[in-house]
Length: 109
Image 1 (cartoon, rainbow, N blue to C red):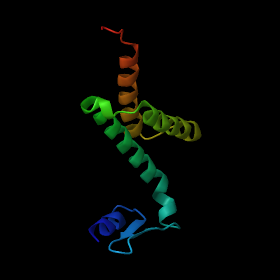
Image 2 (image 1 turned 180 degrees about the vertical axis):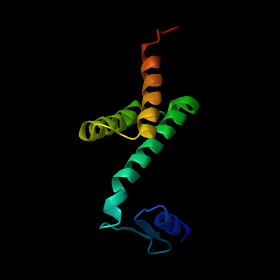
Image 3 (image 1 turned 90 degrees about the vertical axis):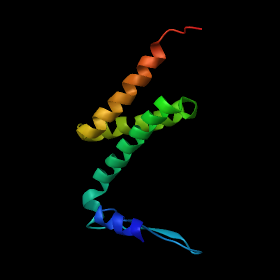
Image 4 (image 1 turned 135 degrees about the vertical axis):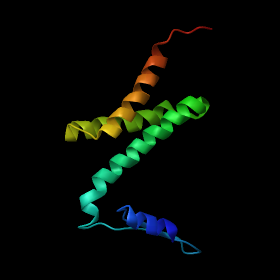
């Protein structure tokens, strides 16, 4: 119930019931349509924050293929809208620079 209250307060339109008949309900319409793009961009920046943390703290769990999926989504959104929110651009850039930098480091083994 608390997740559903939080979802509503945060202008989310995804709700879940719990118990033996657990279900997820997704609502669309005049309220959701005003904020779903912004909500998606916030979830995408959350992805880049988490991938960065995994990259730094649990490198063995980092999957370049997974990163490439989200990098492609980021690029497609940038191509579609031209500008993306600074919080998203900055976090993506930070992760990309670190990955790119590590990929060009010479092997020292």
